[in-house]
Amino acid sequence: MAKTKKFLYVNRKAPYGTIYALESLEVVLIGAAFEQDVALAFVDDGVFQLAKGQNTDGIGVKNFSPTFRALGDYDVQKLFVERESLEERGLSEADLIEVVYEDEDDDWAEKSAIHVVGRAEIADIMADADVVLSF
Amino acid sequence: MAYEVNGQTVECDEEGYITNLSEWSKELGEIIAKAEDLEMDDDRWEVVNFLRSYYEEYQIAPAVRVLIKAAKKSMGPEKGNNKYMYELFPYGPAKQACKIAGLPKPTGCV
Image (cartoon, rainbow over all chains, first blue to last red; front, side, top):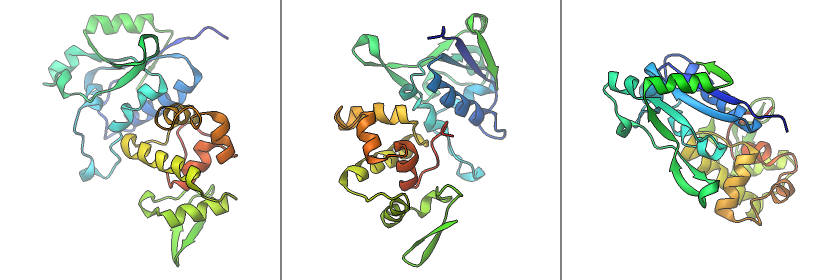
């Protein structure tokens, strides 16, 4: 098998108002079928995509935030959220939805896929990726 | 295109997926299955109901690989495998079972 590449999907925009967030998630779900090393980063307004308790009734579009919770089933285990972006928006990790995966190497223990990391670490993660797709 | 259920018309796209998910009913599921040359039995309903509850929870129709993995967990390995699923739904469990379940085509399915 060809060497797997590290894919990083960078999400910078609020979940609604533009199509970027939903399109990014769809690409992630499609791409996950190809058994690459997939990670997601949430920075700037992108952190709102993972906010708990989204309600889209008033704007007539589908609330797709529950779909993030399916990522574990797709073997996507790394969602990096930038701490500074959260803080600048008055959010903390407690305001985010839960995304878990089952760790094959640890007797299928359920683990959180969400990792809150600092801005400098996000830069390292970007530098380390083979392919960066920005949405 | 459309299906007829008890005198009601239910719109669908050119591949037979219904356009308004809220118009689904068990009767409609039977009718879509018939159009797919399938007879609904308990085993097929088990998969269709599973897909509907997966959609309810995650707002997506899962890819085949994910469906089989999740089915393995909730229905056991004798049902959560490719052979079993393709015997029930020869043209693809995700595609055919999703259509019968009134869900959109699975993401990533071409």
